[in-house]
Picture 1 (cartoon, rainbow, N blue to C red):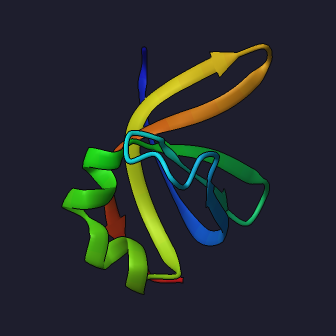
Picture 2: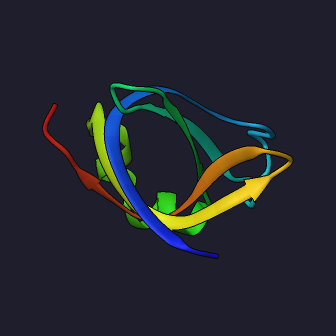
Length: 83
């Protein structure tokens, strides 16, 4: 999968199955022109839990994923980003 990066404001985030510890966190990021779908696996959320709970703007780098004409970024590293 190709690598990519972007940044923007967190629009919303949710777990599809909150009771499962292995379920990914899905986050929608608004980058000023459109929305970007992010997938964060539990290990990434755990490694960056303070950042994920305190920031409203994020920069992310990860793998670009295209499934059924829907683009997602599988996040490998989130960072704090200024608005």
